[in-house]
Length: 182
Image 1 (cartoon, one colour):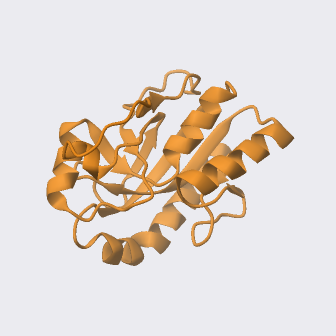
Image 2 (image 1 turned 90 degrees about the vertical axis):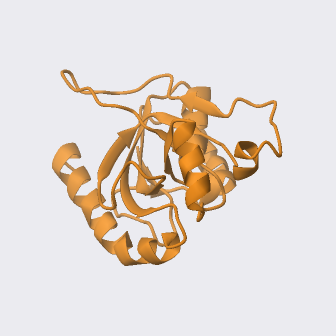
């Protein structure tokens, strides 16, 4: 099952599950219980903390839920805040690095905080992926994600996201059509 966030990031070949951690968790859980998919493949856009460039295509099966206050030692959590898909699908002969995609309901716009994310080995920011990997693991469903970078996580994040969003969606569409034969 191919998944996307929704709202302004939809595709005719993907199921929208909602934006952010909560909407995506609720809606994906409903889909999994009703349709029992064999595989979850999330497609979407992401911000880069600095090591990936806008319009670059990145695959991942690793996610985190790190809030900025955690990086500043202003809070803690008893919860596991970094996970990897328990079951992933990788084509024979294919290997790739799996950058950690951080999910939060907030967008990072501070370069210093983005650099701290990199220091913690976090590379990308997408609002839904932590929920998707969590649910995939809970139901023992293979899972991975494909992201096109729209912006760096800095003071221009929103402006650059708007500027690059249409092109990023087109790159996602072309990649999925070419590699998944939809």
